[in-house]
Amino acid sequence: MPMHANFISDESRLDLSFSGNLDVSVSQDICAIYNSVPVHLRACIIDLYNIDRLFDSGVALLEMLHRRLVEKDVIVVILSDDSEIRERMPDVTHLPSPFFHERSAPSPIGGSAWERLCS
Image 1 (tube, one colour):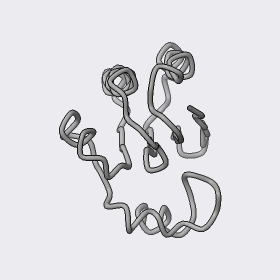
Image 2 (cartoon, rainbow, N blue to C red; image 1 turned 180 degrees about the vertical axis):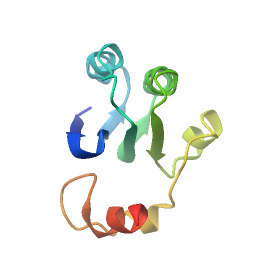
Image 3 (tube, rainbow, N blue to C red; image 1 turned 60 degrees about the horizontal axis):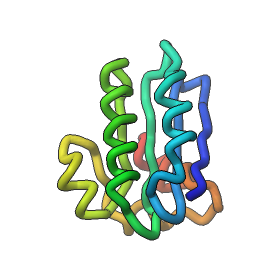
């Protein structure tokens, strides 16, 4: 399960995107972020649109990271159209997939859809 992380220092924002299966295979990456949340981090965008399967272990890791970020007063936005994620984390923002899937660049975060979301 690949995870891609991109820190935008000008915005104090961390963008995380996942692809493949969201499961225990991403635990080292999530734990590394969990243990090193920068003091100045203001926002974290987590893109889950490219996951194939959702496993309990992956959801638990995501919940753990979400709690840690919220403890640090970080705004967390999860981009997903998966009903299980919505049920388990109802307080997190979700975008409908047609809006976000129009991006043309291979980058999981960015492009015109992202710019419209932020404007």
